[in-house]
Image 1 (cartoon, rainbow, N blue to C red):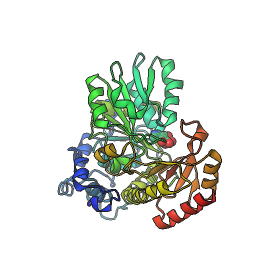
Image 2 (cartoon, protein in one colour; image 1 turned 120 degrees about the vertical axis):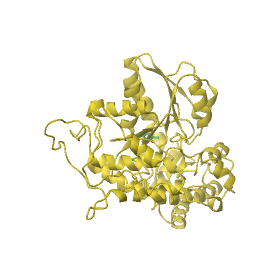
Image 3 (cartoon, helix red, strand yellow; image 1 turned 60 degrees about the vertical axis):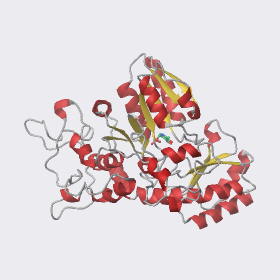
Image 4 (cartoon, protein in one colour; image 1 turned 90 degrees about the vertical axis):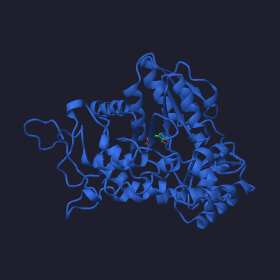
Length: 435
Ligand SMILES: Cc1ncc(COP(=O)(O)O)c(C=O)c1O
């Protein structure tokens, strides 16, 4: 089953239920286990159990086990995770807890201690993320902060890292500027060639699929198996897909990182990120990094992302469905030179996307005749917000070559939003005609 159950009936490209079922190896770890194992840990005795607050978001065992872990059941249960934990008269949504200190007389063990260690609003959003990932999840103030936690929490001088040559460019910049001087070397490889190049000598293999912005794919299961054979850790940046669209931990990745700045928050008003892993040692390391480096999310941003996650499934569904309708129409448009979208049957990533993704995503890469034509199209379209970033409720677009990405000058990354699809298509078509 796909995100919403009967996916086959909604796929314009002849999707079959058997494909969708095969591509859904959901976690055997349920949200109860995630919570019982703790979300994030910390530095030994400093770890807190948080017994006294009214709003706790651990799933209620009595309410959890009935439904299997499909994306639809995850989505159905997500807004109800806290229900069994509320006392009569408690607020249903989580409060924004603005606190740098907590009431802490005597022995501090087992209690919240300090705002750099704990915050109840982080814990609320981490519970939702943990539920969606099927793994303990540690929140960070941005996607790059999450990636930094993995790099600086896990790597040591002398380690070698493999990065995607065509993924989000800031990850490579971070490695160049701040890992290299520590004696941590890195190589780059095109995403589509990741599985074929070997992984001998790497401590960490960092993969991004579909890669931003070119939307190349690689086979996560193959990469994870081969990288593990070579002794490497596998980190997947799942920003472009969210846990509803792709589940790298189920495909063998050790760690997921994601920028929740994008679709998970969805309203373009907060930066956020998280790291998820089923390995307690890795969760501990990134939690320790957060606590010691002070790379902590703000309570208000945590609250915004919590709110965003409650509607992620419905937004993601609308955005992906609209992209599935718009991409083939763009492909037929005389003013569009080429289209990249994993849902297109002739896209080089299509067969793999059908196997490893639950949806085809909401990002479309389209190449127009020149930089000027692309800029005119973006400016002219009344339902496009010109902006960097993606995953918002509003459709947005940008010409990625303006940042130096290795794409054609006329390449536009279109992030399909939540607007009704025919209205959106009319606006896109009009702007293409005028560009
Ligand atoms: C794939 C990917 N990973 C990570 C990030 C970084 O996220 P943030 O801007 O929240 O730091 C981005 C941002 O665009 C991204 O596209």
